[in-house]
Amino acid sequence: PPPPPPPPPPHTPTSRCSSAASDVYKRQHQILPPAYGNALALYYPGSELFRPWQLVTYMFMHGDFNHLLFNMFGLYMFGTALEAFWGPKKFLIYYLLCGFGALVLHMVVMYFELANLPPYIYSRAVNVGMVGASGSIFGLLAGFGMMFPNQKIMLLIPPIPMKAKYFVLAYAGIELFLGVSNFQSGVAHFAHIGGAICGALIIFYWRKTRRL
Image 1 (tube, rainbow, N blue to C red):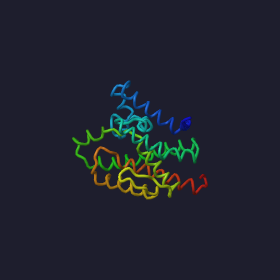
Image 2 (tube, rainbow, N blue to C red):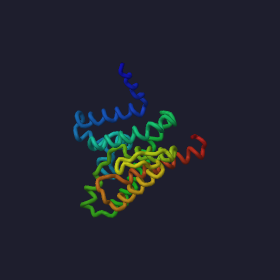
Image 3 (cartoon, rainbow, N blue to C red):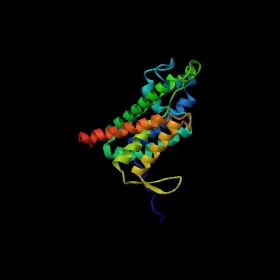
Image 4 (tube, rainbow, N blue to C red):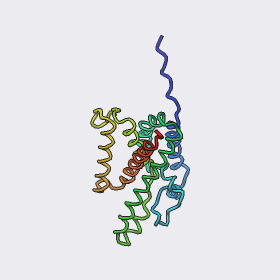
């Protein structure tokens, strides 16, 4: 007789979070009018479009399906191991704090960028919103690299294995270069860096206070 099929993967909170984010994306684009979708993105506090709830809702909104796909892939790849190691409560706290850390650095960078703009450009730049869970995902990436530094990750391009600690440093270096050089516009690179820095600081604090 043929061998039995493998058991389905367990429905961890991380996998349920991925499914929930996918559902939010579908509802965002199929049910919500564009005006409501814009109200959930994060805008600079000096913008007339800024609302307090955006500090949270921006993490669950995405610009397109590819944006969502890559973030949920990162959540599954790195979040599953951290959640299993820390437990759901500590994982959720860490995930949300990394999202807040991402927006803090993004807003600081925006402050200095907007300060040097002439008024006719400022009026448009201040009303550019930010969406996505990428800051939290970079926090997970930093956390994975610190908790499992010697765990090997198989890269897609090129297809070679790399230890997590080196992968995190390389990826952070690329993001810093892209953010400083503005080589890839339209991407909040400093939000990614902010999420990673916040994640690293949280783990340093937890280790110092023996919470890990």
